[in-house]
Image (cartoon, rainbow over all chains, first blue to last red; front, side, top):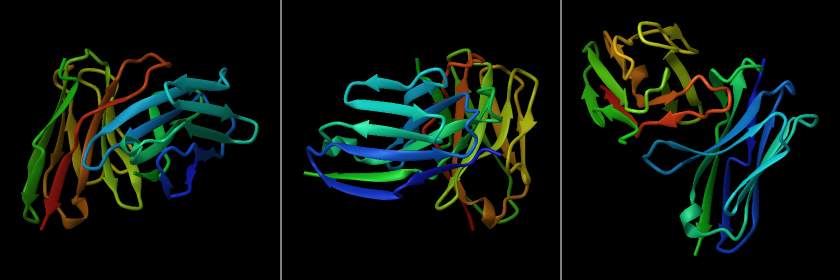
Length: 114
Length: 113
């Protein structure tokens, strides 16, 4: 059974720092790994989707990597800004092998301080 | 395009009352989902639909019913609300493509007293 874990639960950094958010999954037969952002009181917005055949995806200052053998994905945020403050969630398809339903981590709450 | 919209944004119910949450999407997506989000529990799937006229149970379906009479709409019903159903409810949609992600609505905050 696929389980998704995110550590740390919360992170506070000064503006300008490069930072890494972690996502672990238990079943390495993963189809893809998805990263979302959630602003307080708002819905979720997709950031990056990494297919199992890919090792990383980039969008602007965001870079997500996927290592199936170790059961880990990381979201790297370069030169963090106060506007990056949000909760970041990762999700993996359940069951592995199709992208119909997702199982979610609990998220990392990020605060970037000016 | 409006994307995924949810009605209402906020609602307060008394125990035992019923209500329907409406989700609408204008992206012609086949798949639609209802989630609830609670502190410490994360996002949990209530029900989902892979096409007009079809519905399926998710992780936490008890106490909820759904209908997908039109492709663009997905309704979530609470027949007899309980305080345990106090939560934030999110609707999402996607295409059947394996490479596609889910698109979320802004959420409905429901309080059951």
